[in-house]
Length: 314
Image (cartoon, rainbow, N blue to C red):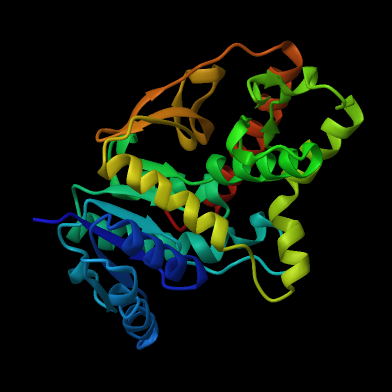
């Protein structure tokens, strides 16, 4: 029997993920949304690509949580997206209510699923999901670090002219302006970024700054929405690592219980992702400056969590 992957929210990211999941044949796809007709219409359109791409999995659009029953992985994008001038913090109240409903649906109908959260503010919403489902920490994670690292890799490639295939990037912390891209652990062809010929500290700092504001840059350009292709691809890569037990090392927002000196909060750290979900959190040594930057980012995440708790929604 094929595995099932449930996509909760059929907006731009949901549709992108449905298409990618079908092309990769990760399993039968359920596209859920509360808007009648939206998931059904997108599912029918995407399903009609199957004869073209020779995909053998099925795709169904639905407004009923009952249809996610038996899902191995649930990816959650439900909620409102950021608009120009809106911070991730502004989204807390509305999206906490949304995640509350989604968590109930997943807990009831897919109690054994791994859950990947994309909804912003990411670090706070994955905390809400974990609290309300009660799932163990290896089964609840947020998609942030892969996207942020991909943006950093893209900007490094644009700056150096080297293929992204030969570039690795390392980003820790919360998914926001306080994230911590680490040039020392980022490489071009295996060469640490600070040692790559021709790259000054100023040019590296500029790439780091652009990475931190990468999502906001796209929001300002689009004016009526936010990024969806890269976020969708990032989440599907996480689902693939779990469903195919790939043992990938990815930066993901996971519950820290002492790792990197923090406890009781979700933030981006490198993990080993496989059939057991978050199978290991990988700790690396940080300089005092890097640790201080990570602590600042963690502090911002704590502020988001406190705002969630003050909202009275959970």
